[in-house]
Image (cartoon, rainbow, N blue to C red; front, side):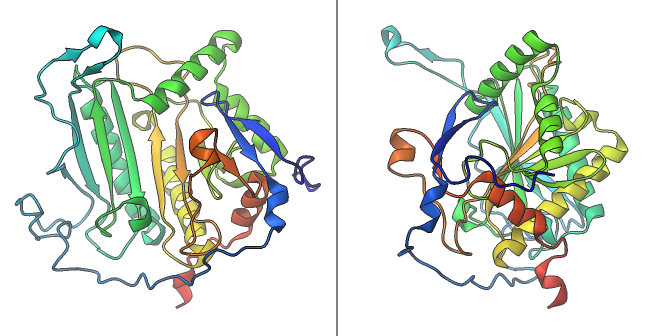
Length: 351
């Protein structure tokens, strides 16, 4: 593992995101500037195991009027207020090329990770995370098999800071007609690299990261977690399968167990950064379900946490980031070292 400081660790520079072709500005010399912003302690994240007011808890009535069963494990249902609709009528608007729009059919599902209101992935046992993974696999397979569904996006918004309106541990699945913008960018990059090299872009990238070591946070037999070279968010990570596989349906039983282990270790480390339930938006990028072969695709999962200096001080995408390109101060190497050295036991375990 590299022990010397990165050669660009003190100088402003740009790094290229090989998954999108876009660039990020890194300004590590700014970390020495005086900080006059908010520094705050974490709020209590102690919650009841069952909340009678929570519309996701077992047996409770949801906001849409449906009653949850008394589920005892992972529970999935169609979102009562879906962003997509299967029965949207086909319609296009062109406006001479200036006003382009079209209806988008799709399905939105909600996945309750646990009947326990107070458990996030970081606090769940690995065997229970495996049950969540099994549901993800079933949903990806079933939704992706529908003829009008060409992409299935599995994701989680954790914490009010990331727009999560209900603290009950849950994620979402949006399945739609078209391949959305971010995976479409990656598909172009993957396909171009595969055409040139006849190899997976992420396989070559992961091999280089494991050899360098300085941005590796954790690895097991089947997966590795790295802070990507081009990371934008302070503690952004990328979870990559060591085997080139397009989606979770193709995981072996051993890979599913290792995936649960990697998710557990990473989310525990996140919570341990500021000793709080660490907010993030996370999601898997899997092969499109458009009926085509995608030998170029390589399974990976993005984690985008906003926290910067404390449990409540976040990085904002403003000014230069909105008008020019993303920018960060601390280097990915610094973030990876901090995450790597954090304990793998949750900070609440001893309390």
